[in-house]
Image (cartoon, rainbow, N blue to C red; front, top):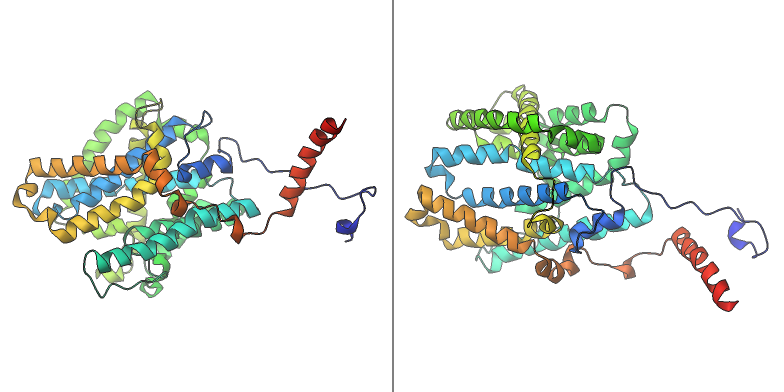
Length: 392
């Protein structure tokens, strides 16, 4: 009780040791560098940086297809195919790298600076951009109703904040799937914080929390890589068949079954069915991701920057009518649009862009937080031997 008032000669309660992350999980500083734009170090696994970069390219390409896909059944099928796994893959990786998260002050601080602050900034910036640049005067600004891409930051904040709960319960994945199924039959949830998406995508994040390094090694075996080719081909054929029979909006996970005009029992069935489909295609995607260092590996550290910034290009182009040119609605035009989208998001993931936007992607904000007393004391103890040696 009175330890804080003890004099230097009295016995004191030992300081809590610094916690190290779980096996196979990079330290919090390494996690921070994914968003701050620092150069990947030797401790980073090239596989995950490659996977994040390729996933974010698919996200950008998929967004560029939205204004074009209604005129092409093939493009609509490709759109459904990509949307079935690109965000699940990204969310699984996010969950995997959240395994070491706890309520320690330094990690909560990084959650605020690396997720909450970018959410506030871009949730404000997107409506302002739409209002003044795209001349949409009735565009409202609301931190409770994520707009366009910012839903992922809102969801990631909630998911990561609840990580200790998922690490504590006995069957976290089953519980997460149950919550997703309940959300799919609950239209009263509404749009606040995009909770439908938060809950329906939750199983992928929890799955990432439950995964170990050897699970990723399993899907990267040679026979899995070979088997994934016919599996993906079959999925593409099913996607082509389903175009006139199923709305792609189911893949967004942002509405309940009743809001689609379907019976309530379709919601849980679609959650389970899409979960199985998405995990199968995600395994195929991971099987194809190279594990060695590639020319784009370093870009994996800037995927948050590419994700948040490319939306401005897509929205501006859509409003300016870039996608309305008739020649873009033919195969060569669609290929060109895809290549331009991939190039743009690649440039937005580069180090110069990350450094430019570091002040909003992950500001230091030391002025806003109290200094952790235990961490300060540990630093003092580390420097005491050095000071004694210098004085001697």
